[in-house]
Length: 69
Image 1 (cartoon, helix red, strand yellow):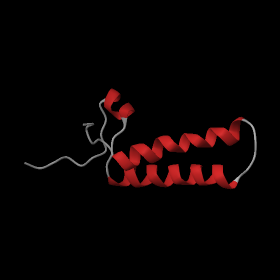
Image 2 (spheres, helix red, strand yellow; image 1 turned 180 degrees about the vertical axis):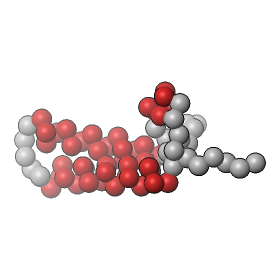
Image 3 (cartoon, one colour; image 1 turned 90 degrees about the vertical axis):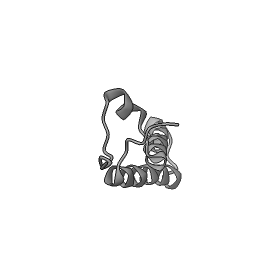
Image 4 (cartoon, one colour; image 1 turned 60 degrees about the vertical axis):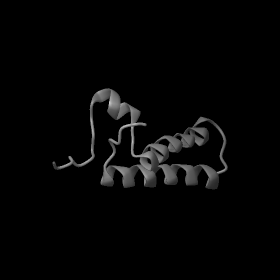
């Protein structure tokens, strides 16, 4: 299982950004590169929903609060 490394505010921001980009993709029926580039919204949406970011893992980052012992 992937390690959770995306915290609360970061997670909400990713989900909102992903939904906005995907919504914009479906509402704007344009053509060309910039229309299809909006599909990148899948990435922040999925990382927000799964609470894990592969890039954070590679860089050793985490926005999750530390667990107290």
